[in-house]
Image (tube, rainbow, N blue to C red; front, top):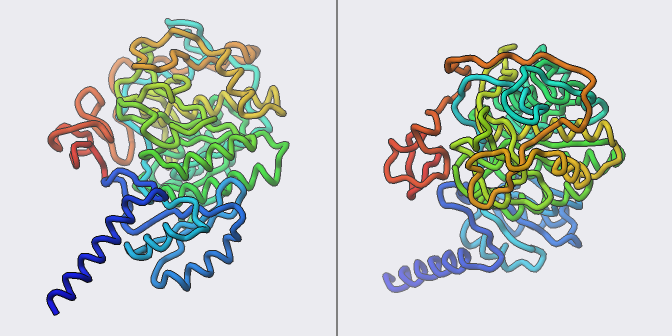
Length: 439
């Protein structure tokens, strides 16, 4: 009897071990992984609805979290998958690959004294305390893929496009701040852009790759149904490398949607994360008011451009205004500028927008840009200059920010995914497997 039990145990261990080494399995960092939850990518010839129906019979007790039926992404997200069921999925000829679902997080840091939009239209320092512009993003849709958007007097009637939760209302603050930088009447780059909330993050500022894929599916559907509509998308979020996430974003860019994505706040190589490593997106690093790469900002060859990302003043829930820092705050500057280009050139593809943005960027301006990082600073100087809006003067002392979960300044603590030896080194006081991580 004992021998039989031992053989059963060894057999189960053998299945688990083989599954984890399977060529079709895309793994993520252990601390990021959502246990028993997987993204299953199917061949394009497979009918998703029929396959899901079959899987419900073949894999009893599994949960179907999301289905993806667009040309950009063909598959299903499953929960409560056992090791034996995972092995069956990996051997299924209809399956291209299976990816471990993981946590995604906002890329936000501690705040510093304010400086605003001023840097975008100035060729060099010092700043002139004004933001000059000709275009306002009128007629362009901007998808804010984030924690939602809270109604705010500075935001021009944002709409709810998609939510993985009960509503698009922002319960955390991150998405509202990002939206204000893209299209706020006072704090925004593109003051007449049409803001659309795509809520994929919860009140704690976290979500899953599978939920994000569902929101991206919605964005693709909008472009498919309205091919002549100029569109930009902002993703001030990310996680460890994800083949599934990169694939769907690349396909949506090819369909014509401009994507600005955050490089990340680990002071490490952006190529290690997604969607920062996806092809065709514009990956944004953060610079400060002295044209120095922010100490928290990721770097490397996957970065495309720098934008202001420290002490950015923008909208917050409850009709408030506050300062936030991070590559999350740099990214919406790029999305807003993309909307300006698209108002001026509504038939441009995402690649044409990037080519113009790249050509108009200020080269060689950023100090300590990081190893292998293109040294380009976002600029609006060549888009036009017939309207001028005042910009708030810099505040001499640090200002407390009404953020949901403040962390210590990057100079005093280590951000997510930074190497660590003990929890006291990390901004959120968690050191696990040699890396700082919030869970």
